[in-house]
Length: 488
Image (cartoon, rainbow, N blue to C red; front, side, top):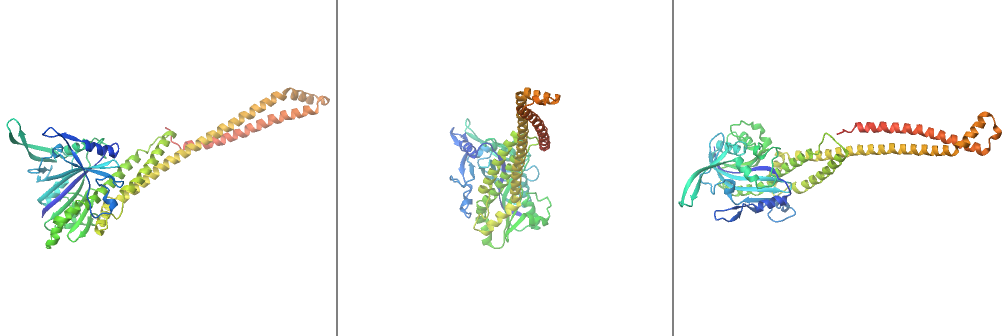
């Protein structure tokens, strides 16, 4: 089984710091000194072209300034900055296992999105290889962690003294290329919470196989291709329904979390073959590529927001901290709504099978599941913060109530004390006459004063006991609420 042609793109997802304008500015300002001692730009602004998309979708990665644009595209203008040879003559990819294969590195782009997500895109081409070798190459091209996966070529070096050119062997690894790209993006980091040089996760493959004939056991082969597995991995044909979308009799899309690849094969109809040799590769690099980029951006943007929401989860709480977390949660809620409004869409094209491919990619990358998880996490984070703050507010209200009752008790005692001091002598004389039986010495005014004195004392004592019971009840409520709050 021979591969007439394989077009491939490998996407490395990363996160950057600052805003998109700063990241784009850093790429625009990047420059190197060429052989003529002139400073030349490393990147040139570009865009992701498409022709059959709705106008709004077609503007997502346009070069022009647009309110619909969610990201910018920069194309590398200096191959040598990234260790690449000036041309592809004698360039080979050498995997850690299997045959080394001739390869053409056809382009390098950096895609920067407003969500602080970026992709390093490496474009390559393979031709006239056995299917086994082509699948082996694509498998290891997505393994940057292994230094054994590298490129080799003969570098022609000009000696200004002898005015002669000689050839020197040269090589570079996938990880060296990846780290070189990262140098141009401010605050670049991976999704693994580890140094970039220790990155282990595999990038995503986007590809197009044009085969000379339909493979035997095509469904099992397609499942391997969907998951970017080597052909030696024995996949079950029954999995085809999960990973394969048949769009034409001789063409299907194979997709999984690891990427998306179209597999087409030659038939007896020369008109059909010309379409898949010329027109379809163009659509693969424009319409379908935009849908793929939009889908993987959705996935990684949601993943980043989920990681950000995870930082709001805290095992120890206090009131000030929860207020800050609530504010951050509400900001995240707004950001998530904006993300869905700007970066998610349905029915991107007026062409039915293009929309089918987009829906297939959405399903294979589990975009509905990611968005549902994001909505739930946002709601939970905000709800937890609001619930905690509500309990704290209740605690504060009860503490204020206790202080109010104590203040009332103090006022009552002070009032009673003043009353006692005011009427004490008269009340004392009246009470002595009453107890000694000298009723003639007790006047009406004395009785009134004595009654006021006694009523004040009795009222103060009664109120004191009543408010003490109130304080006890409020404190019991307070302790129950505090028991629901985790202290720092």
